[in-house]
Length: 171
Image (cartoon, rainbow, N blue to C red):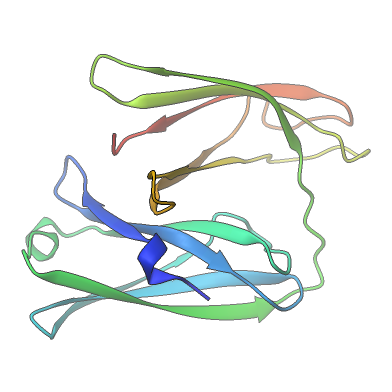
């Protein structure tokens, strides 16, 4: 499910509209797919589909998503509204969660928030194509922005660490 009161949209520097939020799954492990329908004045504008940032979402786990309406003309509608539909595809894949053991932040000259950190592979086996996901919230728990990056190095041996940086472009 998606709680629309905890979602948001914003226009980026290209005039494209981003919609962000979180999916909360209540069943077993699954792959979450989010379809966002944009309307203006009750008329259909576009429908965009994306996946949650977590490849496999565990039961009762929040998974962020960021959907992009990559059309500046449609995105500029003043009375734009949006709705979400979630498709759940069950899977037997077991997700692994590594640990962010250190993080810090700074703001650059453009006002963008940078998150720097170290991720540790604590799962006991090698991890390949590791992703670090960051979800940024407003003071009222609305998802303001979500993004992901790969650490350096991309693959982490058991017990290995990698560093990362994520930039919140909507700040």
